[in-house]
Length: 239
Image (cartoon, rainbow, N blue to C red; front, side):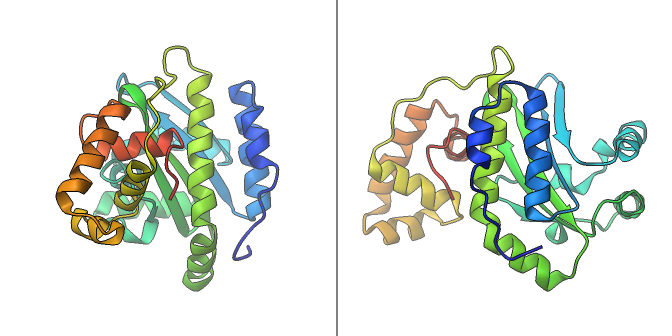
């Protein structure tokens, strides 16, 4: 597993995907290119409908469902509370159920390291794009830091294509954001406070608020967090 990996051609492969099965082939290709143990893309919408593609052993997938691990999985719980990528070590594994879950997962080939990207789409859609691998902390940190931007981009490409294949779930077309609106939303997406974002752009917080509210309206979002999530999922901004 290298620090950075060339992903030439994979975006084009995703763009030309014509079915959900094509996404399975693409995720297997990505796993091989990255040298990761496993990669998985999994969504759940507001109606509880689910779809996933990934490289976990089918025995682990079936066990996960049979044991009802969705209710105790710290990755799912933690990602639902965030919209920034998260290293699994930063999640809450303190409960007895969580510790039992990770022991079972590792016994079934899930790596000791993990990195997940939460994705929020239209109509209450929630998805997670995760990688995991067995290696030391330093190697994993170098890998995730070196590939963070590409992984976020790929996660949202996977989600965009999955939405295209499901009738009624394609995001509505949004009005284009202005360059200043894109700058403001990008800074908020990477974790800047409003004060920090305004200072970086050399504008007042009031002016920043005007840009953010305009972007929120164009994106049809309920609040700023929803606007950032929509902008990311539609590729309007990239972090």
